[in-house]
Length: 128
Image (cartoon, rainbow, N blue to C red; front, top):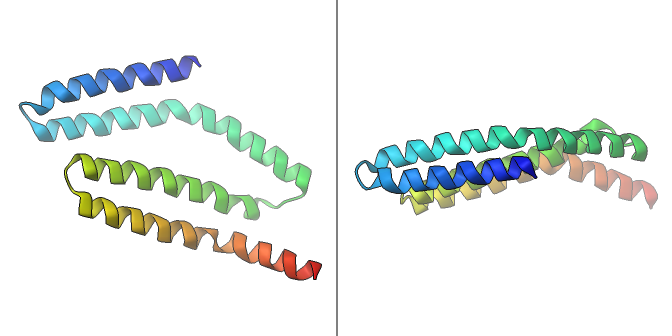
């Protein structure tokens, strides 16, 4: 909870500064948004460590190899990067580029998840 309060405070302060700065220099507002985003993401990395530990524990309990869970983590990472990149493009009034980023992110997520799909398919065919 304290981390989220800090993240919210950084976001609101950066948004207010960005609004003021964009009136004079629009490009500087984009740089400010990128810096604030980097700071916010670095603050949230601590929460991801707990999630990784839980996933490792669940994988050990279920007897799953790390190769099965790795595509899930990679897909989530791709989704986060795609979302942030597309929103930054939209903020820069480049909706077309944002659409291409989203399409590329979907393709990358599908590609990364192929090993997981192959594993599931082999498990299902092994049961039959």
